[in-house]
Length: 259
Image (cartoon, rainbow, N blue to C red):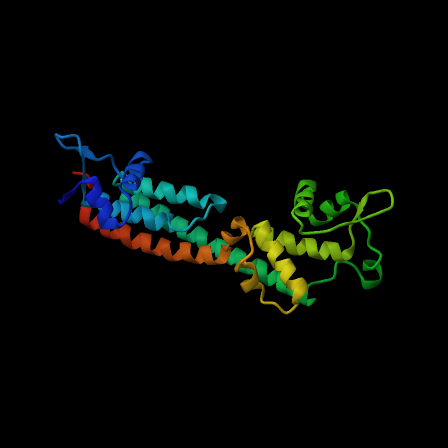
């Protein structure tokens, strides 16, 4: 098996030597043996393991514990337990596929709501007169009061007030809240939902999938980083590549990759 110094392995992969050391400290690659002069000695397995870790961590997906699962996969491979790493990766891929389905379904629900194809909350005559308190609204939608407050504080909903200062929620507010709830349940961020709502206000015929997944040039960094569907699809592609890499490492390095 070939051996490499820290700078050599970093050069082959195209990263800084400090990144190699960081991967070692985090347990994403095995501890390197030391030469008589104290220098670290890396092997072909270290080289392939770094490539694998970079594939697994390329897409920043933190929801539903996906990031944690990716790290668990990397560490299983680091330990040479390729069978466990493969099993975990298959589970990881399955969860990503479920997240994609959930995100797509949420968009479909919103499209039906906004096109009027969903059932009305109330008969028309009563809907115009609907006036609920915050607690009644939360109970009606089966969400928490804190969620309502959070959505309002982040600009997703502006609620009218009575003369006594109490908030009142109308049928139109409830319809908007159902949209927000549907998207939040699929892990769309508040920034992405706000972007979609603003776009629909300007253009009711806007393409929801494009709007919610495409931050504007003036959006802040949190919003720019939020491209849920794009990120999930990229993570799915990477998970498939991880299966290929793990299969190759298992075949090449067997049960004692660091020897």
